[in-house]
Length: 583
Image (cartoon, rainbow, N blue to C red; front, side, top):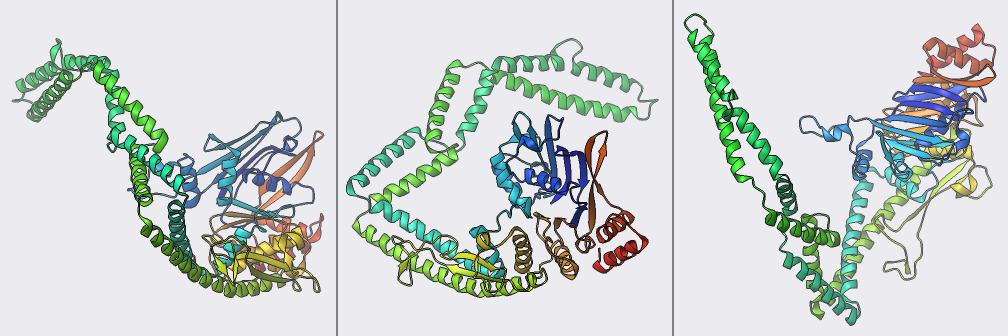
């Protein structure tokens, strides 16, 4: 969820900051005021390519900064990239906290330099593109990010199946994993005899090399720690000698001062009530100090320079690092690799009966997969009808009452495929063998076609909204991702616009939506309303971005209703519209 957005020197917007909230956020303003600039700034945070033409005239660079509350999936992706958020590092009470802030900053300079920072750490644009879908998705007139992707269409269809789909998908994934394991094993065993023996020789060589090293789990860490001690043995001895001298050996050492303090207090015990307690504490302190000095002395006797041992450690670490470069980054990974090599060698050295057994295992695994994938496909046909019916219902309220929408399940042919369905080879994988395609026709008499072939930008925006509502089907949350709709209401008005506003507000429950709109019916549904305005000062255009108070919001909705001249009547109508929309 996006909490704060800061923009500097983007187009005509010199500097602006807005604090978004959960629920339905609306951005309005007169035509040409700069509403698209906000969408452009969010697109930059989404990882799109940037041009120096976006930089405000007279400025050397532009900056867009977003403050997000990332979900668990996003945080795991960041951790995999080596970026740990504060809550990941310091969980409370041993429980991993999700209350962590993610700050993304994008900088574009006139020189063409384009920099991305995640929590002030420089990262690649590629990484931003990978994490952006977990944070923000933009759907507008110019580009419908992801709507036409077959993978996303399949995911949305499976959402309709809810728990039934989850169960079937897990079953298919497990069956596919079993098949791949058996198929890869068969491929190794059934290779030509020469290649097989070459592989056996290679495996034996690698295992002999590993066994000769006699690798122990975790030994590299112990050796590195010991190496550091030996490298700095003189400094350690000097520090220990200094500590011992200050504690006991020198004149005026800590132990002597404690004894003198103890004697002084003991002399006044008869007159000072608290002196006896202090003497007892000093006795305990003297004992602890003596024990400490004994420990320091013991360690001092043990620390000594040992060049031969240091050379032996360096030589062992060289051997380990050579093995790690070939087999794994640590002793644990290398030992796991050794076990895998041994298992593969055992398979390759098996007799012909093993080959026959593995062939049978492959066929059994393939049969189990075919059965699981067929059950999933049957479920998808049922969910496809449900999804199409729900989407058509949503579209009727968005000036697309005559539009048709359907979900097709196709199969991609592949002659050499191991899986046969209805007598022909088909592509298959962890998600089954169905190729899911959303098809659409906006007007009567036109054939249904893929979304990227027949739907306009405005229709795609409304389709996305309809699919989101249909797949959630009563869910109370819009999810952790901030959804941005850029003029999804284009080309509609009146009662249809009010219905679109209501749908956006419904979809935003428990999540966050930012919608750019020019319709008062949509704006009246907002939980939080922002306005973009433009002024010319000293010959320069300045765009202002502000969150509206209740009275200001009434005036803005009245302007959207009546035009530039706001009257008491238009304000009254605006209040009625806002109250009626529950905004």
